[in-house]
Image (tube, rainbow, N blue to C red):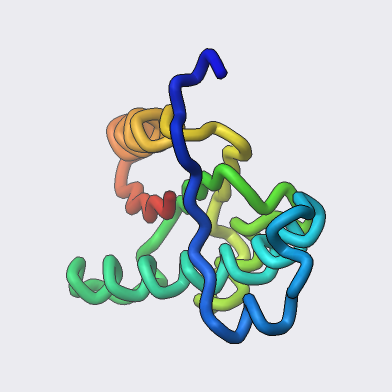
Length: 126
């Protein structure tokens, strides 16, 4: 109540809804879906960002990933790095359950990483 959040949203496709009829009442069902879907959604955003950047993904040195859902191991950062085919030497930072606060946090973290590591190329997915 004190957060003043009136409504929470979750990205769902018709397929997910049909495959999970109990999703409305179950946090576990939503978490199970998020564990699979969050890395996929992150991939879409990451591919777009890498395309706009115009450099090869092999130049990425750091991955900072933030999600308000999908508290799962191995984490969404690991799953995304694997999906994208990032090199194992990419340094990963994962922030879970940060809510709206997470967006600013990952940007500050990415800025610090880029400024304090010569040649760093930081991919942020939030």
